[in-house]
Picture 1 (tube, one colour):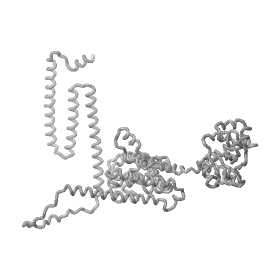
Picture 2 (cartoon, helix red, strand yellow):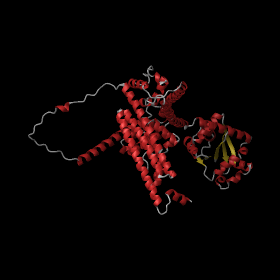
Picture 3 (cartoon, helix red, strand yellow):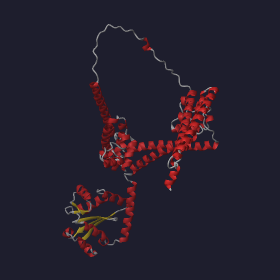
Picture 4 (cartoon, one colour):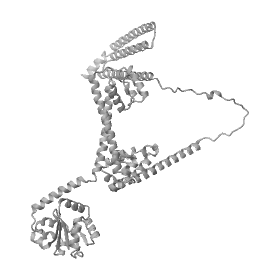
Length: 575
């Protein structure tokens, strides 16, 4: 029996003197001393690695259960070449044993659990079994080989490309958040100077570029916005700048606003480059998944799973709800319906389906996506670079689109059948002697003007909308203040008299507001004066009536048998 053992120095081939001792349960006793170890095993051949590169190559092949070039040459020369092919060879890895027996036709057996002491004993007595070997030199060679092997794995890791996709999609989401935050800050800051511009230009990037080009709103008339805005928007913007109700700002303010606009423009430009990079990466890594669900959804699925290979290990049911784990476990805990989709909901195939078919489409897309992911994960890089690489994804997408159309058609037919069944039958036609004249008024058509809206009118409309929004905000603030005053009065336990005084103050404010509205609406001064005098008389009469009512309440309270006022009762109860 021959034993193959690999070290950092090379391959060692030992001859077993007594095969029965290998099968015994107390094999560890044979390796207690170097003499006993040399009595059981004798070195027959030694193959040294010529360089670190060859050592890394052979050890990597062994870890994958394959035969390296050095090991194949060594076994061919020492076992087959010397006529020892009939003897059984013992190796530590069963995958390596199958590879050797398949390629070299040698009877190879892998060690069982009881033979594990053999490799432990060789490892402890390796210095005695190899004459002239210094243990320090072997330790140094092992350390160097382990460093080289780790460096090789990191350098040529198959998960490294997936890591690039995971980092790119995470950065893309962060950039979207940053652009939204910066753009909202620009609109709030510049809105004090030109509040109508936010109503006219809704796009964040166009808004920032317009501010960067225009500066102060007084420069709008002399600025050309043809490269940024269409002609109609440009005219409305210039008209709104002339009648804007914004405040004035200084040069330092506009300088800081310009720097913030530069940030928004630069980040959006980089976001476009990153999206293109992610698209190219996804087409190279997972062409079938990209063709089926798109690069953004595919990248988010890979990022959520960790890598493309780990995503390929998930079944279709897991791919369908990937990203909705929180909702899934909440539904299982509360015994409600589980979610139908997770991240895959954002795929275009599910988005274009009607609401009733979204769950069914999510299930079908997940099944096809699981197949596409496994094809992409198990195909080598050469196969992915071919023009026909995304063929499976394109075929599955075409099938799903045709299936969606068929489901929509059958749904429409069922709806039409239900409508026809519930509807009334057609009325039978009967000839009557009545004669009707032709209605010429039915041919009259309202003419619609094809001219564009006047820019000044549009600008005035925007200004009025801004004024209306400010007025509503002012009224909301007043209402909040009134509610806070009432709460504070109730909380402090004040009397009804104080409540009435607060109501009188509110009534006065309402009257002032009505007067202001009447002045704006153009009521004559004489009419206003008469109304004011009437209101004054009414208010004086109301005040007199309230005073009489208060006096009557006080007299009743004094005439009570206890003779204690409500305030005194409260004080006594608290005491």
